Image 1 (tube, rainbow, N blue to C red):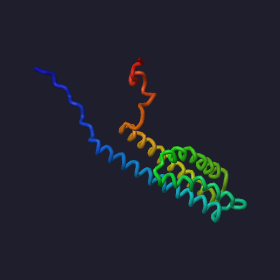
Image 2 (cartoon, rainbow, N blue to C red):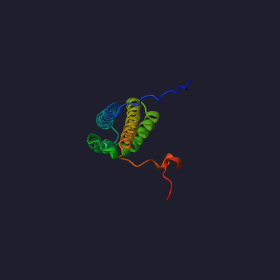
Image 3 (cartoon, rainbow, N blue to C red):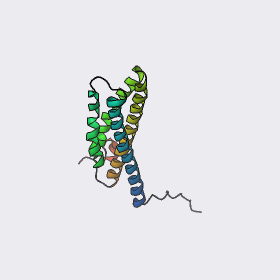
Image 4 (cartoon, helix red, strand yellow):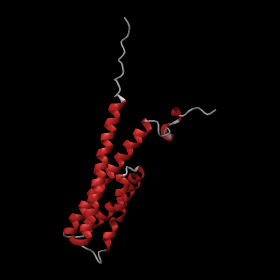
Length: 155
């Protein structure tokens, strides 16, 4: 009696996989753009009307975010990468002000910190999915971290 072997599960067709990746990229892009616009609106409202500090010059802190909107709308992967690093400055400011201030500033600071985390998460997922899609399409070289088994032998 011949041995019965389990056949591997069928893989998803490329079109289905691409559609799933596209939906993920679209969703993360919408979340990232929405988070950046919300951070800009919050920063301007906070520093100009709700709880201004000094000469209201702190409203200038939103300028890097305004520059990021252009890159996000043009689907530039580089923008998602540098924005995922920049956003930690806004998170840090939010946490410092949330724990050291009183009144309305505390709520505004917590909102800034949460929006920063949301933006970071959207950027990270977006970059990972786009790189995964590019690698699957053969647009990226194989990873050097794959180990010696994945590399070709030296001549």
